[in-house]
Amino acid sequence: MRIENENSDKAVLDELGARLARTRLEQNASQEQLAAAAGVSKSTVERIETGREIKLTSFVRVLRALGRLELLDRLLPEPLPSPIERIRIQGKRRQRAAEPRREEQPPGKRPWRWDWEVDPSEKT
Image (cartoon, rainbow, N blue to C red; front, side, top):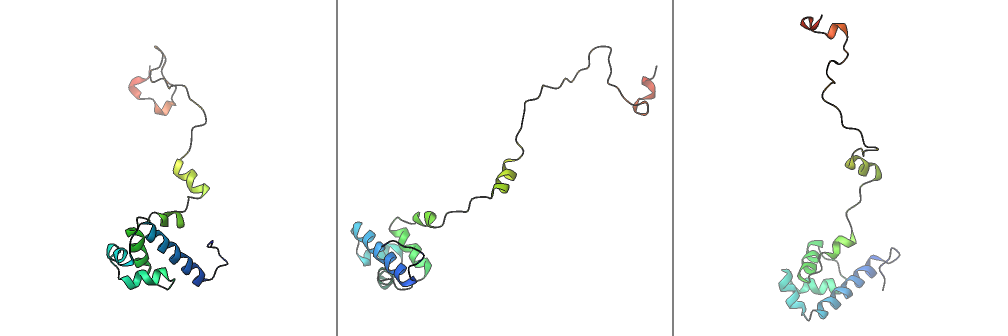
């Protein structure tokens, strides 16, 4: 069965439990072995596999014991930044290349300055 929005909560839990049971059997593990590896009781594994409600932490522990915890990352991926946030993160990009600035002035030429900026010792 495909898990979709139209499914009831009970149908989703039943399907998740059935999938978990198939995964456990593919790994050739008993409910007791899985429970011991996950640090939960055998009745918790039974409740998961029969589609009954459990604590989310128990489900995480069972997934970890099965080596399938990374699947939760695909279930609810981290949200991507908005386009405006991406621009802010990247900063302003250069639009064109610039010529290198010259630090030295040609001999005999000084940069132009206002009269009030000129040091009195420089006046001729």
